Image 1 (cartoon, rainbow, N blue to C red):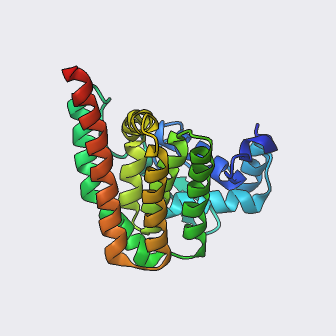
Image 2 (cartoon, helix red, strand yellow; image 1 turned 90 degrees about the vertical axis):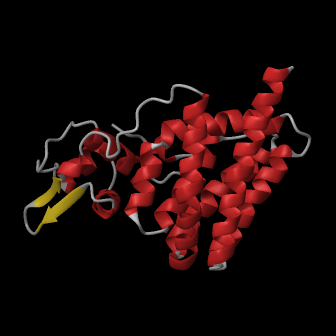
Length: 239
């Protein structure tokens, strides 16, 4: 059951329903081609309205996790089972470095496509995550969840599910890097403010449909984050 409180923190009820259904599908709770419960049954299960369920189901379809048959309902795609990409556990610093290397390859292009294809809804999602980051920065804190949501919202705004699926599959790996990076910049007098400024500049480029700037700013941000993190770790080990 889901109460209204779970929609707090700028997450809509549709986000919560989507996340729970996505986890259920990826965990194998539903078999390939198994029909999902009806909208009415899902609305009753999650204690939300049918339009909210309908919005969550649309997102699942957009991500290729389910498909619909006219008059028959929604069914689970085979590719939606388990983890869509075979990333194992993050085991050492080298894995974290390779994760950054991969992100530097894909996220600048996702940002460029987001700048080209953004709409009101996708900008609102990016902006909501940015505002959570602004609030944390004002309190001299770092929120890894908001940071990840910012990058994921950009991947979704690209309207290419390969980008967003890769980001979701890498969520735990990315969170480790964000946690260490956040701890690193908090030690600097203006570290959090500078990093927030980098995110804000990326958002503004996407909002202004400046494809080249969005790509370059995202690349610079990721390379800078990687450099700050690994240079800090290197200096600590040398002491």
